[in-house]
Amino acid sequence: MAAKYIIGSVAASFAIAYAFDNLVADQKIFGGTTPHTVSNKEWWEETDKKFQAWPRTAGPPVVMNPISRQNFIVKPGSESGRPNVCFSFVKV
Image (cartoon, rainbow, N blue to C red):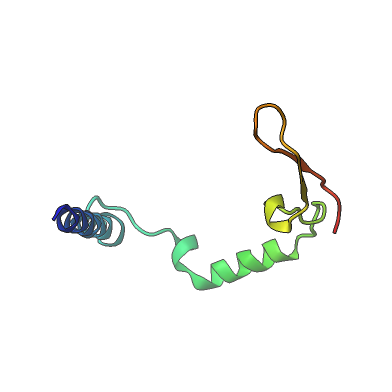
């Protein structure tokens, strides 16, 4: 029984949030205009070309989640009962 109230409340909050977002951002009830750099597609394409033309100055890509690469070793547990995990960060 509580689920219908929770689902209804979440749906209503999304509807209210959408309505206010539409009023403020799209219909601009507080005034203002959309900047030329946002509304002009040609401007966006030229800016994107400029950023893509810059050379890459960073190093090689880094794996952000080493556990997904399975490059760790689980050693037998210590006196605390928890296993010791050693990460061996080597290129595979």
